[in-house]
Length: 278
Image 1 (tube, rainbow, N blue to C red):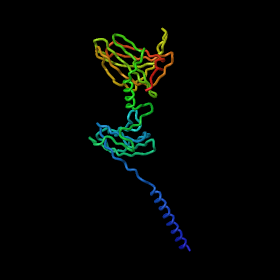
Image 2: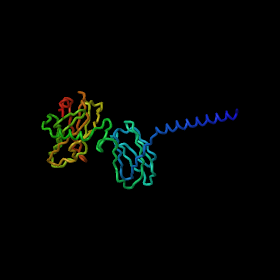
Image 3: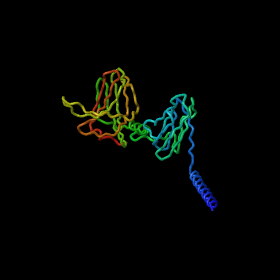
Image 4: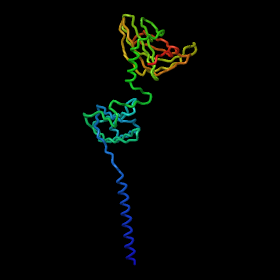
C-alpha cells in the first residue's frame, strides 16, 4: 500500500514540474530582445542622434560618454567620448512616443558616421523646444520686411551725425519685425557694439529710478558691425510681440564700440499699434 502511495506522489510531482516548466516556456515565448545599435564616438567630433519625437529620458552606462540634448531642440541628442581610453558602454533613450532606443557606444578616433536619423523624419527636421522658433521662418519674414517699400514715419533720432530711424514695423503671429535705418553722416566709420531694446517708464522723477525691461532679439537680418563714413545700412530685428502700456515706451539703443556716439530713440505704443501684418 505504501508503495502505491509513493508512486502516486512521484507521478503527481512530475506532473506539477512539467506544468510549471510549460508555463515558463509560454512566458518566455512572449519575450523579445531589443538589439543595441552600435555607434562610434570620439573625443574631437560630435555625433548627433536624431529622433522622430522629443526625448524624454536619457541614461548612459558610464561617465566615459558625454551626452546632452542640442540647445533649444527636443529631439536631437549629441554624444562625444570623454576620454580616448573609453571603455565600451551603453546608452538608453526614451522618446515622447513611448519608444525605447538602445545604443552600444564604442570609441573610434575617426568615426565615419556622425549623424544618425531614426524614424520618418528627415535629417534636417528638428523639434524646437517651446519658446524657440525655427530660424529659417524668422529669416523668411525678416527678408520680406526688408523688401517692403512703404516707409514708417515719425520715429527717428540723430546725434553726432549718426541717424537711427525706424522705417518699417511688421507683425507675423507672435513676432514683430523692426526695420531700422542707420546712417553715418560723418567721415569716421561707426563700429556697432550693441543694438538693444528696452521697455522703459515714460516719466522719471528725481527721486525715482527707471523701471526697464530688456527684450532680447530673436533674429537679426543683414546684421552688420560697421557703418562706413558717409554711408548707410538697413537692418531688420525680430522681437517677441509686445504691446506696451501707455505709461511706458520702447527704447531702441545704438551703442558705438570703443566710442561715445551712442544714439537712442523712443517708440510709443501708438506707433507699435500701426504695425503692418506680413
